[in-house]
Image (cartoon, rainbow, N blue to C red):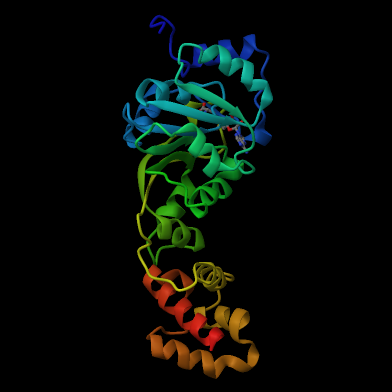
Length: 295
Ligand code: SAM
């Protein structure tokens, strides 16, 4: 390994690489490259990698994070959508034989298969990425819903989205995203990151969040898909009460009496708002609605 080569994540080297390859960053692909090694160290540290673990990176860009992952993990596989960056990555990562770059759209790839093919020799695998902000939520939901065998997901995302993922019931940030993410994992905000550590600088501040995958969901639901339908319905119109949202989605105008009785049995006040319900209460509610549906 050539120890002389300076890290990619400095303003000088990043600008030099980008200029030499004639790359203009595409806003439409969320291309904001990290130029701060301290932030990278925090991301890599939060993933708790070691030489037995694999790292799946989404969007390596010009390789700033990939390089740090390669130094820490057993193997790194990085998925990049932008073909123009492939020759750049080939050059910037040439010293790291444990890195493989896959050209593709993470939302379209068969990730279960890719993980099987890429990480057979690794004890555990983490997703570690500075995500493109225009598709943060679809990417994270894909990783979670496909139930990939991951130890954790450590990602840089918009600060607001990170706060929503980690929010507790009764707070303004709590919503269907919080319930969905917390069903699959335990989120933890690692650090807030100012917009000045990127080239070009995004409009918003960012945060690093760690999602530790749960072995089992924290609540028992009889129909997972329906559980999330109920959660969506409860937050459909945030200013409406839970009762009115449920009425609109599941009972119809004539069903108020039936709904009131069902909620009374569950000890849930129909006048509450969706954002005050815990994951347990959503589970209780969804299971009762499944029973009614089957019933
Ligand atoms: N990891 C680099 C860094 O930290 O400097 C770049 C991060 S940049 C915020 C996001 C990267 O994701 C870009 O390289 C972009 O081309 C890539 N990207 C955007 N959409 C993608 C997708 N759907 N699948 C894979 N990569 C994507």
